[in-house]
Each structure stands twice: as C-alpha cells, then as structure tokens.
Length: 611
Image 1: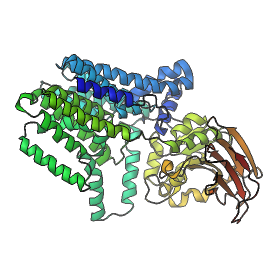
Image 2: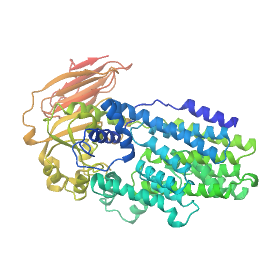
Image 3: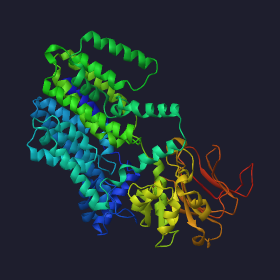
Image 4: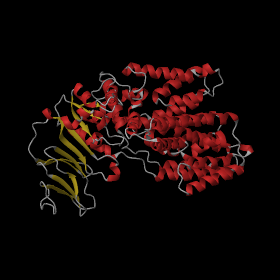
C-alpha cells in the first residue's frame, strides 16, 4: 500500500483544487434558468420560450443557492457545491470499495484518487452538473446489487443528473440476478421519468439541448456534398476515439486500461500479451495515435494476469459491463453526435478509478504492485503536463454583457447563439438562437429560416461573433441558416463591436475575440459623434475603453516596441468597446487612431498610453 499511498499523495499535491475561472457559456444557461425559476417566470433562459435544455436535477440543486443569496450566491456557490458533491462521491466510492471486499487502506486511497482526478476537479467547478454526475455514477455502482426499489430510484436520479448515465444504468442492470423484465424496470422507469419531465418543461419528450449542436455538425458536413472518400474519412475520424482513444485517455489512461484488462485480457497467455504490447510500442513509435489505453491495458494484464491473481467471474462481469457503458457513452457523443465536450467524460473518470482500485486489489506480489504504481505515476505526470483548458475567449462575452444594456432600448430583444453568459450577466432580453435552450429557434434553423424567425419574434438586434454570420464550413458558421432573402446583411447594420485585445491567437482559437452588435436600420439611425474615452481601469492593470471613429478610420494598438496591431479597420461610425491588456514588463501600451487610408508611421500623439 506504500506505493499506492505515495501515488495518491503526489496526485493530491499536484492538483490545482481552487482553479476558479472554468465557467463556460453553458453555465450561464443554468444560472439564468435557475434565476427565472426562483422569480416565478418558469423554465426559460433569457427571453426565450420554455425549455428543457438543462440537466434538471442540477438545476433543482442550484435553486436553494439563489433563493438564499441571489445572483452572487448562485454564481460563486455553484463552484463550491460542485466540489462538495465530488468530495461526497469520493467518500461513497471509498465505502463502496470497502463493501466489495477491498482493504480499508486501499478503499480510502481509492476515494482520494477519485477526488484528486484532474478532469473531475476541473469540471466540478465549471458551474455545470459534473460534480453531481460523478456522485450519481458512484451511487449507481454502490447500489447496483441493491433491492429493486433503491436501484430504480438511483437510476432515475442519475438520468436526471446527466441523461447519458441511463447507458450506465442499463449496463449495471444487466448484471442483476433477476428476470430480464425485472432488470429492465430501473432503466425503463428512468427513461420514462426523463421523458415526462421534458414534456412538462417544454412539451417535447427529449431535451432541447440534445441535438442542435450535433445537427449543426452533420448539416455543415452534408453541405460540402461529400463523396465516398470524404464519408470514409469522416467516419474514421469520429469512430476512432471509440476504440479507446482520446476520451478514455483524457479520463484516466491506466484506470481505463485496468478495466479493459480485468474484463478481457487477464487470462491471455503472457507471451500473447507481450507480443501485443510490442506491436503497440512499434505503432506508437511510428506515429500511430490512440494506443495509450490499449497499451495500459496490456501492461496491467501482464501485472495482474498470473493464476493467483486472476479476477473473479463477478469482478470480470462488472468490468465488462462498465467497459460497454464507457464505449456507449463515447459512441453517443463522438460517433453519433460529433460534438464531444470534456465534461462528457466524467463517467469515464469514475469508471477508471474503479478499475484501478480493483487492479491494485488483484496484485499480490509487491514488485507487481510497485510496477503498477509506476505506470500510474507516468500517467499522472502526463495528466498534469497538460494544463486545464481555459476558455479565455469567452471573456469578451462578459465584457459585452456589461456594456450592451447601455446601447439598446430597455425592452429590446437581442438574439445570440452563445447566449448563456449574455443572458446571465447583461440583464437584457437575450434570446438563444442555436436551439440548445430554444426549440423554436432550432426548428427555424433546420428550415433555414432564422431571418424570418427574428422578424416574427420581434428580435431587432443580434450580438454574435463574426464567425457565426459566415456561410462556410466551420462548425459555428450559421449564415446559411438565415435564408437567402433573410440574411442579416440585408436588414441589419453594425451598431457596436466588442473587442478583447488581451487575447493572442492561441487563446482565441477559431473565434475572433470579438462580438458584433447588429441592429435593424430603423433602430440605429441616431448615432453619437466620433469620440474616445477610457471607461474603466481593471484590477489587472488593463483598461476598458470605447471609441467611435470617423468613417474609414482605424484603431491601432502597440505594446512596448512590438509590432503594431490593427484592432479595427474601416470601422465606420459604430461604437467600438475594447478590453486592453495590462502593460506588464513589455513596455507601455499605446493606442492610436489612423485617419482614413493612413499608412506608414503612427501619429505622434496616441489616444491612450499607460504602463
């Protein structure tokens, strides 16, 4: 147990447990949904129709936070509530392992391993249901052999916590020593309850959030008129991860490998395992990817596959069911929906911890146990070598949300595709357009009539990234879905731009770090004259400013002696709100205005200069 203890201790000390800027736009949907519930306005987000586009149990868990402390308690408390639920999952996980016959020390270490998982710690703070999902997974494992009523109850609650946990419930129900129709009761009741809840919320038996992004991915691919070769490449791209590729590795390489080894590989002859491992090593050296989990499985099988430590039939059946559940979850999100997100792999991380704990339990030789710990250490080092993914480009959503209320009439309806943060932070009447919390908008998008939908709904403003108005093949390019005669360029004019100049190309990714506010021509006639002003000094030393330049002018930023960067070119007469970076040690930040057509040297006097 010494090696396992050192391993868990190293993992706990390495994790950044208080990482606090992980909120995605999706968290804003939950926060605004809960706020509307507490206010008595029903199950809506922003100013949209009733929606079922949230995981219902997490929304209900958040309601007391807002009821007790308002918006601040909800936004700040969601993070700590997620971590609390993850901690509870660790305690229940340790107790479950102990009840299954594992030693008390190993069970405790298993619980600590679970709560220090980098993916779980990061995603439990994302304002979404990840911590609750982890607890629901462990509860399903803990009660898989319980009486029929408790098992059915946990199936229902788990499915309401995260819909795809129904797949794990089905896999575990198949293990129960009952007649087939009795085994099906728990998952069937869970599916029925989920459908009824969705019907009550939005009048549809499936969740609003389940298909819009996946439909968009498929629609964008079909728009390229793919031939057979393109279809084969697409199928390979999305089916490869199901064969123990990226999702499984992201959620715990050695643990997933342990599950696979216990389920299928342990009884194989040692020579066969060594030969297969040699093939994988050769493939990895040749550049073949997605072999990490398979390699871990072979290593674990070599360590635990002696006759004295072969897994019991019950353990092997459980491991096989969990492998099937993991495969089904990945296949759903990757091979079917084409829309994976990191937090979808929370169940895989729980199952990986379960597999690793049982692998340690199967090893009796101290040398093999030490080798298993070394393998796990290598995987932990890999996990921590990659920093948590941050969504810095979404800062521009917060920036725009804080300003847009000053630029549009009080009762104006504003359409947005990424509408969570905007609805939560702005206080404006934001309407989601991509359909994840708005079934009506999704129907209009499928009919390629979003433009008509805007007019019918009285949506006179759009707040979106420039990418979202394009008509190309990028996933988030939605210009083609407005309808040829209803495209925004025919009806809307640019009223304002919100630019985050603190982001580099890597942080922006495909996004521009910019939002555009478009309004109908009749709503944007009266515009103030050109001007420049500093709106705020941020705590990090940066500045928030606004500029309205003359037609054709350009706003240019220079940081120290670095190259100048054109923030806005040919801006017309629209307002430009800019988040400027802190000066840091690279020299002063200067902001210049270039006149129409000006080139060459910058003007001698900057609009703004600070260090």
